[in-house]
Image 1 (cartoon, one colour):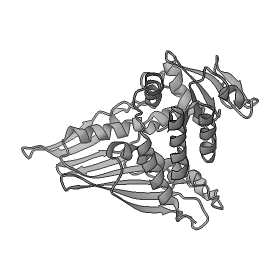
Image 2: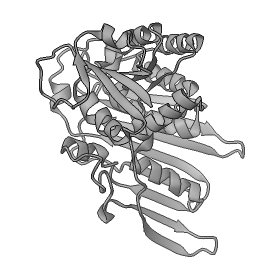
Image 3: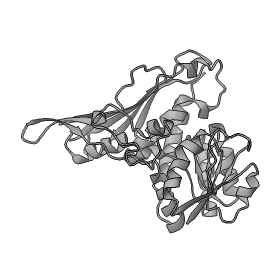
Image 4: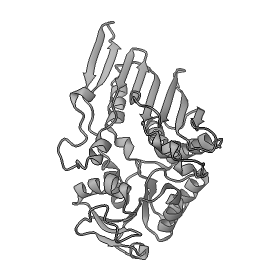
Length: 346
């Protein structure tokens, strides 16, 4: 059994962590949740969990194997360092930290103490991403030349309500949402050979970052090149396709995103057998020519997404000393891109 505690009792903890942790109670126990307002009952209390406003109860509990940080983004580094200094393994909500220097320090500290620290990159287990990668791996598209990944919203009120840039990188759209799609690509293709940035404040100087369009270029051993583009905006009334892949033999288009977040927002939880499952109308379209020159156009049944797999992996890493799935070098690569892409915001 792995025993964990959580710092923070807001949307992150209750929507993106606890619903999945409660499905694996046979191997992970949530013992304590730290909240700065014990009177706040916005989220329903869960039987068997100790809610406290004293963080020392968490730090000094010898039973706690892992502490999860579900706080404001700009507090991640501070609390992750505290957790490690109290000799606890640490899982940090995204974005991990603001700077490459902070990330390197946390990894160095964890290594010195024989501990694990990593971000909660649950989107590696999105259905749309897993399905797209499965199509690529099938070989039906031939040599992959270009991948486009989009993460769009129409939330005009968010950037419109920001009247001045607070200078906190972790609060930008690139750090908050671009972190997901960048991590997905880096987890499969590694560090790019070159990066081109187009990161904007569409509403002008001293407003929030609300748009990004980043090209990642990979040089392959066979001499061919792969271009991956990750894009996102707060001003897309009609979102672009979640993934588009072009190869020498065809293309794959996945219009809709993973549905886990959609269901969680409706309080439709993972204990439902159809939680997060795509319907036929959500299936992606694969178009390709086979080796005989015959044309094919077919729907691809979506893979099943599961955010809880992050915790399955961490259990194996902490309890059975398996290798980390979310590797330090991947996170350092990602943070460097996020930081570099945000340096010219004004």
